[in-house]
Amino acid sequence: MTRLIVAAGGGGDAVAAAMIHAALYGDEDQAVILTYAWDRLLIDPIPGPRGPDNFTGLQRLTPTVWAVPAGARPIAPAGSTLPRLAAELRHTFALIDPRYGVEGATRQLEELVTHLSPASIDLLDVGGDILARGDEPTLKSPLADAVTLAACCQLNAPVRLLIAGPGLDGELPLDELRGALGPLIHTLTAKDTEPISSVLEWHPSEATGMLAATARGVRGTCEMRDAGLPVHLTDEGPAIHEADLDEALTRNQLAHAILTTATLDEVEALSREICGYSEIDYERNKATWLKDQPPVQLDPKAVLSQLDQFEAEAHSRGVTHTTFRRITEALNLNGSLREDLRQLLINSRPKQYDAPLWRITATTE
Picture (tube, rainbow, N blue to C red):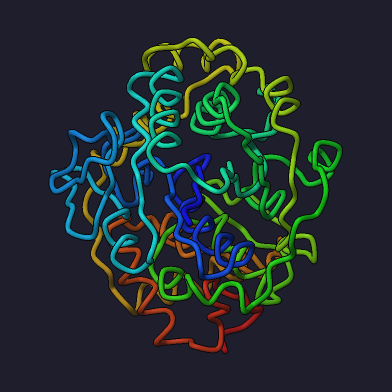
């Protein structure tokens, strides 16, 4: 029996899809996880999502849908976490190609449903920003979610919209989301995180990392992203809710506006018009800035000294945890050094590793 899960925003949503598939359906079924190859600049220095032409070694599933197997490789300088996910997880990862707008994504979904005859179709979003209107001041990345929401709403098959870890993406506060959340489907436990435990050791997703951390019992305030957004880790963190798909489309102004788009450029233009920006523009600007930064080597002594200062300031803000992405950017290190930094910190101060987060202490332990 095959189930189809659409990872609404790509990235960590694909990892969460593997965890939630096991939690909701057990191990007897296989999942095809339809997701973007969009890993942000920490992994992929090229702004925006990657398409099939950015990979070698893909496997064709349907005329417009390609699977990313373990042996696939992004063509340099592009980067992608998908081949490694395919190597470590038992599911099939299929590539959303947003170059042809919502019309293209809808066509991909229709082909997959015909090809797979899935037992269920879930649209999964970690954090809940897929339920945004589009004008919220805290919203940062509406584009990917809007495309998948609009495509799923046009599919002639039942789709269940699942929101995992409401508020954990740092985009919409939980209080703003509550009115749009439907029934509680499941509350994740530490046992539910076991299928993806190895992936959490290296994957850079912050929202899915916090989802797993709250399932493991971590509580407090976590600082994330380059802007240091505070996210509260509460008992509601590991919750999975269903939300009404049609109501989400009515609420999400960008998703509603892009229903008939045939190119990514059209989607971007409408995002600028409705939300005031395109998140790919943000990546373009940041990529240009990063290109001009001189390379910084990882000096363990200097890094630990800088970490002490960062932790002291974070502690004064009431922060109890942070992500390795946040530390990497706060210490002005190149994203390519994130894994080396992570290993240095865990080896130096293992008691502060609340996997997969870093625990902030008032003084060095």
